[in-house]
Amino acid sequence: MDGRGLRQVFAWQNPFREAAAGRSGEAADRVTVLGANANFPFELQVRAFCRAAAEGRGSPLVVQFSHNALKLVGEDSRSAVSGARLAAAVLRHWVEESGARFVAVALDHYRVPAYPGARGHGGGPQGPQGSARAVRMARAAVDDALEACRGVLGTVSDRELRSYVDYLSSPAYADFKREFGAVVMSLDPAWAMVDTERLPPVLNCALTRDVIELLRGPLGLGETMVEAEYGATGSAGEAVDYRALRGEELARFAEEVASFVAYTGADGISYPIGMGHGARRAERHEPDEERLGAVQRRIREVTGRYVPFAQHGGTGAARLVRGLVGKNNVNTHFLVAAANRLADRVEADLESIRAGVKGACGTDLYAAASEAVQKATVEKLREAGTFGAVPELEAFLEGV
Image (cartoon, rainbow, N blue to C red; front, side, top):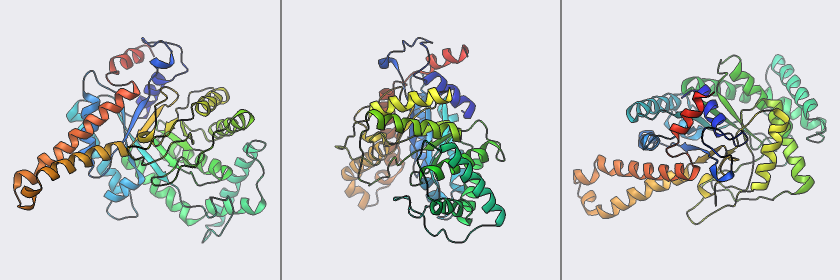
């Protein structure tokens, strides 16, 4: 399923549309699209994801490959391009083998170069600066973003603005754009996320718009849905530091995010709602449904369109806010399912494995892990309300 097809899936998933195709419009009847992250070895998890999507009447599913996962597979630690080629080939194979009809590929957490002083939003040395032309273009991009954000994102010092220009005109940023372009051309994702969580808001606006224009223009990927990030959604192993907003504070945050989406032209959005990456089994985070509802409604009011919210850290969510969460990203849940099945098999057959018994060490060991991931995927599809939903989706698409 390409970007155009995925856009249609989200048109069906849209919690704000009028009841259609057998859905009541009530909260209990809303759905969320599952975003399942694949890790190395790709064939183990991708096989499981596609077979789960093909079970029963069929389910829509997004199979995601993160920047880090692609780099691990790539021919060297700096390049994710060959990893993207392999990921695309493996997914194509298992989509065809399984018969799953509504599976899309996504590029997840493609990280931009580190910004000095990002945590405190302070400027800092950026290293070698780019050409005079790069500096002029960076200055124009920063000035445009600053003007668009005026009155919404607050004031920015001249020193910090200069650091934004240095960043956008740096060789490191030019290298990022080249590799990002090569990766998306190799993977051809229906959805692509640019990870900017450490960037200050004005720089984030300028960079995100630049990346989206790169996709829409020179790369010719106008149908690819681009997920932008506003604020830190967290990384694995980080402590969760989250504060709920109420009243004017919440309204101001919603306005910031809506203005960011309107300026950048993003198709998907992520922002903190209290989740955490890499949650352990007993760890649960309560989603801030009030923030989620306020921001999503304001985005719709400002832009006039539905922009799905991508929830990161779906493994540790105490509950899934169906509908308002457009795409639920899950990674650790599937890693744990596979690792525990492997651990159980190894524990049961340890003596035979140590003795070199082929049957104990062979493909059945890994097939069992894949089956565990398939079962875990079906569980998450049921949680999202999309397991077996293909007939309903097709009925909606016939009326579009």
